[in-house]
Image (tube, rainbow, N blue to C red; front, side, top):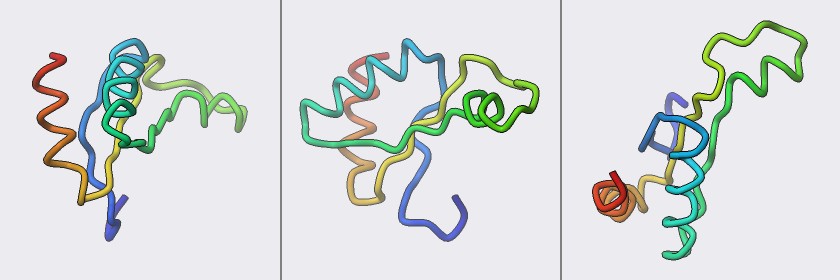
Length: 73
């Protein structure tokens, strides 16, 4: 996401991302999750990184998100 107000916080498995999303939601932070394999599947292309997702947060939420990430992993 070049020139965006969002920053990459985490890249990991679907299970790790679900845990992170839950922890962030408790602090009223709702991330953008990018799943290239799902996008590729919907478009009819092959899947390159199956089961890997990326979590993006708004730049204002990154500091809190990093603290939550450190507590989880």
